[in-house]
Length: 310
Length: 262
Image (tube, rainbow over all chains, first blue to last red; front, side, top):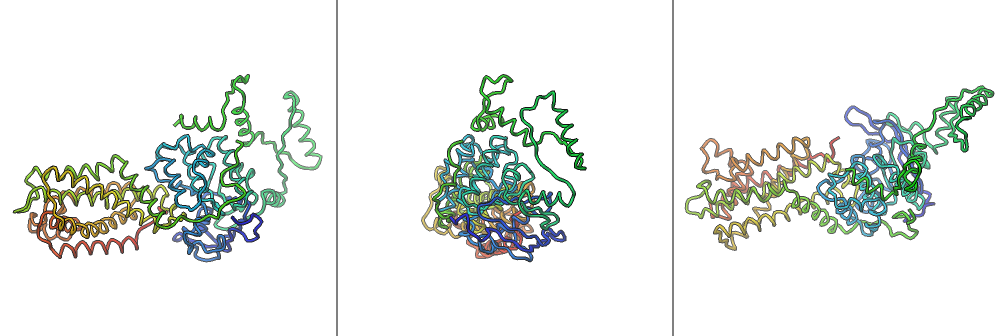
């Protein structure tokens, strides 16, 4: 495995263009993904994210521009190169007529020294539905299987398309930890997602794509700060602890007054998705005799429940 | 969760592909298992050819003068089996693989597109071995007594037929929507077996239809298998027709097969 500190980017794209007939999907897109980092590609549907990943994984040949993936042109790359790149594609890519466990073992057999299949299956909760036919898996289970197939070859560069879509909070948290751990041990991770919690919690760098070109890039904070600087606004996440509910309105009024003293308007949006997810995780970890009826549920129990719910 | 995440150990081997042969064998094993464990596929691959064998053995249809009825029945059943696996099953499975993104995914793995196709061909041949054994045993029960020469001549004809119908199956899978693949491949299979020179020799058709049936890959395959198994006339024209379909089919696949729906 290449050192995490290796200077050369794992993915370097400059001025890529690609068209589907009259539709220009990539219009001069530039992108860099470094080893040891999670790079998130953001943008609306049709922005060009999937086309960019398709070019980087050798599925499409860009019409113009330069593209280097682990130092080689992916369009001309052979099996040796493809063994260094793991891909979790948007539409699953899973053969539906076999079982989850058998498909994972098949995926591992394409590599000389794959990860331990049982270990991967246990970590992602796949062992709970290993004997189930792929066509009968739920969306979240398919996502986990697709992720397992992407990582089982020990890739140096990992492309993940909506990796946590359809997963319950416990599994999503486990997957985020896994992605983070892979990046910290040197893997370059490129993920496309519409889930901003994934971006904030995972990404070292973001690349915002619109109209087939990069419109902003940098760290999450850099991109937000730069955008707000242009828009004349400041955004921060604020959580107050130990607040008596009776005085909460007064606290909010004081905050508004403080903002007004600086000539600014304060916009209070209330709790967000991340807060709700944290509440869910707390409830699932609560003991059986929790006063509000919360029941115990570990990630493994969640997996079993997921299986039962199908 | 206390255990370290998989793939994050400090000392890790370099990612490397498995040897090419092992990758192809792995894919062939997966595809063959899918074919042989799918109830609908088994009906088309085993049950229907067996019904053709028993039906033609019992009924006075598709026989050649001076030959044992079980020989002509087996030739028709083998042609049915070959078309079911090479054409119908492969068209349906490949069509669904394309819709499910499997073709995109395999192209990003060390298997690659060529490994996928080679594995698929090998899987088809593996399933066909099972078909030949089952139908051969059934035919033996019905009185078939094979000679070594006829078994040997069967092999090249079988391979040529597999290439021709496999290419046509991939073409259907690569050109049509998945739902259309399902309908077209099943319809074509039934028409070819019933009226395309498989169950009934082309010579038994009315003069106007005979010329058309002679030019079909199914008509050529049926006649050649009857020549091998039942000692019917071995027409070099049938070899040429089947070869032409095989070459044209492969060229059409190279030109028009789509790996993705987009």
